[in-house]
Image (cartoon, rainbow, N blue to C red; front, side, top):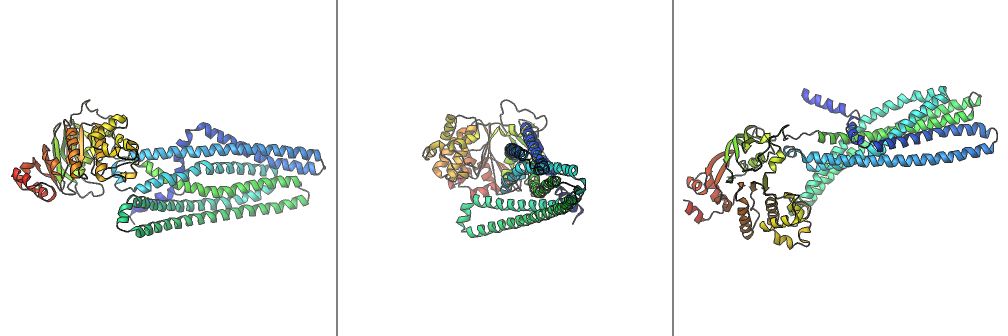
Length: 603
């Protein structure tokens, strides 16, 4: 093992030995000072009320019983009923405020984590599992909700009750207190040691469950592919094995907590029994009254119960710390692509002048393989440029760099002669409308899916965009028209229908730059002609980059760039490139539906 790996493991283990990740929650708790103050007030009231009970018991035993004073006893029992009512009210209010805090803090935390995740650079999602992220947003935050609410409240209550009981024990009988207090180190040290093991095993259980959730999310999202290959049994077995692994990890964590609880309870109550034995002898020889022993015994039981509860609470807090650590790791992720401290403003009217100047780029997952190498592109305002090449040539990478999902490792890219790295990425992307090859349809209505292109658009504007994309007719044929829910990933639509929804989004956005990635690839011949007509109108006066394999788009491009292994090897008009009989001509013959007439005309 390398020194670096050993150091990383040591650092990870050090973090697991404490509850510091829970401190990450303090800013969320501080937002609600009134509720925190109210919870603490009722917590103190409930604790103080509980600690008065032994005093009442002592006076009743020493005065009421010894003097056969029935009136005195009746008054004390009436007082005990009042104390019980006060305790009940304080406990109910404490419960309300702490549970409210738990729900509120977790809601804020979930919202912040999700918001943070949506702002992470695409490079993060190249390796992260979406199912695991969802698991952190759900299972881990649920664990934290318990910690911030009931568990934290129980921890504070039992801590205060334990301290108060120990103080009153010393006040009541210093000699007997030594017996109980002497056992505390024997109780606390094992609790801390076991707590570390609980936290480590709980973190492992949460990680294992997250992996299972990630696999389930992936399988459910690909259910049609799974069923088309009749692999239901294979997928079910894989998930069953993952769940079983999660169960084994959870079982080990629970077993550790059970051992911790048993060990703590035995030591605590063994010390109480020893104390009671000595106290009984003191009563017999007259050095202590029965009421004093009863008072001391109740305080000892309170202290023992508090410590026993703390042993279990410590285990739950350790679990929550493991969950908080996972969420903290997610919140600690920094987006690689951010706005500069003082971003340059784009002109009020963006014409669409784009330049790639000696651009080189490699993905982090393949650092030794250049996706683009020394690429120079000069695109004029209003020009339509088609980009062609075999799979993996770098076509989509050009779009990703232009949208600033990544920054090039060498060279630079400019829009209106401004380096993209000097712009706010959101302002940059606002100038571009995209139609991807794989259209993402959300589990929302048809209208909301179109308005994803411009959320503040009116319904009439969205309908006009749908008409321009030739999507209006099939949408109106849906059961509820534009109000029809399209299902997750648009499973109720055909590929062509999904693509027309994407084109409607781009039309609605009305951006000066269009990025079309096989915008008509999923359409039949009739729909393709309709959509191509809509795109032709949309492209007028706009700078357009097209990743294309269809001849209809390529023929109308002002210029064609041919990519091969990340380099531009040819460029020019269709006819010019066909006559060269180079890579483009070969790709055209193999992949394009060119037709003999097109080649004859070009040659």
